[in-house]
Image 1 (cartoon, rainbow, N blue to C red):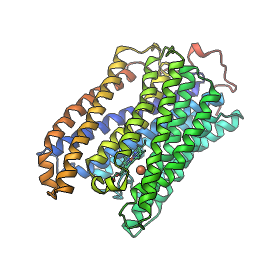
Image 2: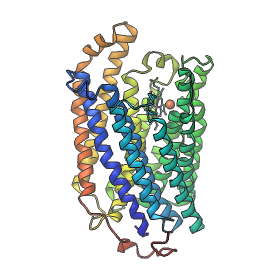
Image 3: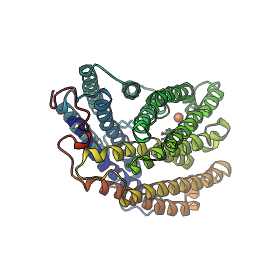
Image 4: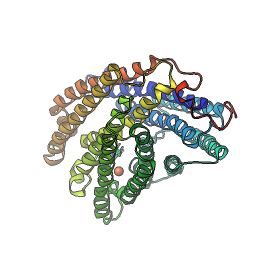
Length: 456
Ligand code: HEM
Ligand SMILES: [Fe+2]
């Protein structure tokens, strides 16, 4: 931590990790519900637990992005944040919004659109929080009078993510039309602008962890972002198969989304090569693990497993089955969970007191148990999904009859999910066992802030 106000990142990460824990509880609960009987059916039916599970994910990952951004922007622009107080107000508002949404879902207060369930007033709070966030970030950069490309791509990703939320605010009276625009938000987030966020965080981490030349890393950042964009925008059409839109979307969706993994291959190779060239010499070995892990797991979950069912001839059978869950879990985990955990792992020795920079065994256990657990979960969903597609879609068995026949895969899901949960608990314990730092870390004294600490 070079700048005192970077400490706000600690509290964003603390909130993010706590909500991550809660998200996991909901996930395990749902897997258990598949196995039945379900004593909680009246209190917490499956659909409510699912809305909580996915919304908690989005709220905590975004909290991680925001915390990470405050850290990155201060460091890249070499200045204190414009207002530390606004950053805390923003965090409180964000957390309250998330908590209200969760309680609301239990009481049946929901907009009923998958992943965008937030009722209208809460959607407005989200917009307000975003505006506050951007105001603080832009004022910080203005006060510093300098910015870097990495930081620029990061902020562009966040601003575009906020803009793409706007279609979710409009009223639609036709469900098909609503679904059409829903993908402008969801798909263009995960396969478009959030990739900019992941890519720039990756660039920030690679420059610091490998000592790689900033100019080279940033050039690659352009290439990756460009490729994701070109393929990802028209790739949206892989959600438009048989939804009521004209048939020409089928080849467009198939072709362009099949190009998306190319950028992800490039990203994984590049991240690995950068660290290898440096001889993996950086003392923060855990941050190195999470950074490379994110690039490689994205290639697996988003690239490979996305490609597996993106072609219309396959998606015709697999759409909306456990094959989707297989891909969704591995992709989200690799791209966005792991990059947030990489940012936390890299920054926490600077944000907490007395934490050694070098990785310790607790951190390694957390990493490998999570990776093994998520890999096992992905395989459980995959095997369950393949069985489901053949029995239900090909053979024509009923939904519930099919579910009875694939129960064994859910036993495997609970087992591997529990392994994953242990990994997450260890990560959370590892994070909270060191107290947050109140002042800038001494080893970074060399880089004095351009602005007096505490300037608001
Ligand atoms: C980091 C990147 C990605 C993330 C986080 C992600 C996540 C997800 C999620 C959560 C869903 C379920 C959405 C829903 O039904 O509401 C989904 C669906 C889908 N994804 Fe991805 N994805 C990513 C990249 C990709 C890529 C690169 C491809 C193709 C090569 C792809 C292909 C698909 C397809 C075809 C579906 C629709 C599945 C169905 O028909 O049920 N995804 N993705
Ligand atoms: Fe998509």
